[in-house]
Amino acid sequence: MSSSDIFIGETIGTAILILLGGGVCAAVTLKASKARNAGWLAIAFGWGFAVLTAVYTSAPLSGAHLNPAVTLALAIKDGDWSNVPVYWAGQLLGAMIGAALVWVVYYGQFQAHLTDREVVGGPGAQDTKAVEAQEAQAGPVLGIFSTGPEIRNAVMNLATEVIGTIVLVLAVLTQGLNDKGNGLGNLGALITALVVVSIGLSLGGPTGYAINPARDLGPRIVHALLPLPNKGGSDWGYAWIPVVGPLVGGAIAAGIYNVAFA
Image 1 (cartoon, rainbow, N blue to C red):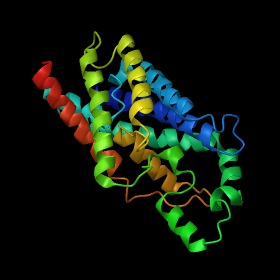
Image 2: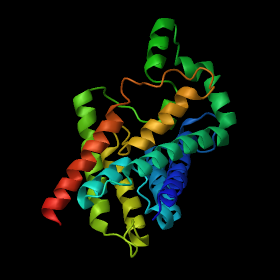
Image 3: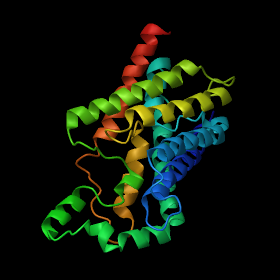
Image 4: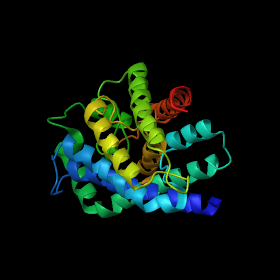
């Protein structure tokens, strides 16, 4: 694979991943969406199908890492670090493109949602300072773009992301590579998608299961840049956890693989 193939493949694949994954979050969250309040099952399966579609699309070009934690784990496993920056650049750019496309698709719903006083202010929100403080930390639609904890505890939140990513990356590493030796084959794509659904259903409750630094950071940057009314803050105080946690988890998974499976 050439560097240009890797960059293009990861950009396209990660854009599709975030378009479909962020899209299901928007569909479930936003006012005037036909899927509003469809629930956690819809989100978990939506993200699983997003992974499946993205892997099938990008695997011929880049091997479909689509996740800096996966790229890091494969570099540790194989000892080849030459293309890591190219993979990471494509993944971050693709995640930002995908998040921007979610905004385009749901533009009308974003406008309706964020101009609804009940949604933005909350039930009977008389305490303006309290509302402003809450929105500065995490805006009312931030969950469409990136993850956030239900209980804010850095150690617990970090541990959740590390453990979830270990499960994902171990599953990826033990799939084996396709015939070209550059990524998951068709069966591996399906299994990985089902693993993502399983992680979402079983481990996603505490933090929203980023398990992918680009998936969280790229859309969070887009949330900060988009001209959304009343969008609130992008919660940068939490943003390091869904970046560091998955990278640590990916490194640990690679170590486990090298000791137990290699």
